Length: 116
Image (tube, rainbow, N blue to C red; front, side, top):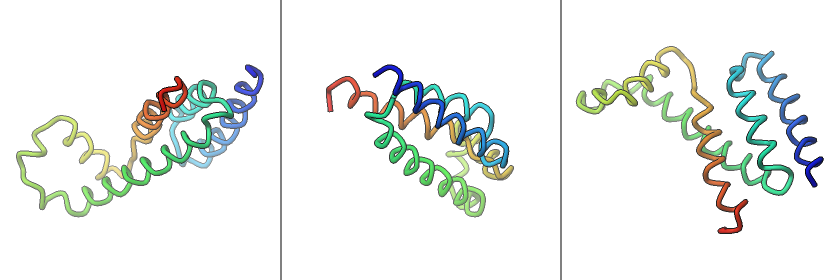
């Protein structure tokens, strides 16, 4: 059972490293994704991956909208440090995918603990 978790983590690490080499993700994302895959294992990996993909798509879409239509949003919204940082990332063409990984892991964890 424990060995299956290590196998999943090794496969995820190999795939994520390939994505890193292609410059699709950062090194921190590779490490976080590998650690979460070790935690999820084969039992919860599919649900985690689905949630991560959906959240990542929502995040990327939000960043694209911020990049092109951010000026239309009320200026008071951009006074919050979180939104200001998102706007900076959007204009730099970067996506903090670790946010999607972390939120997906947190949303999947109740399922792992038997609450879902």
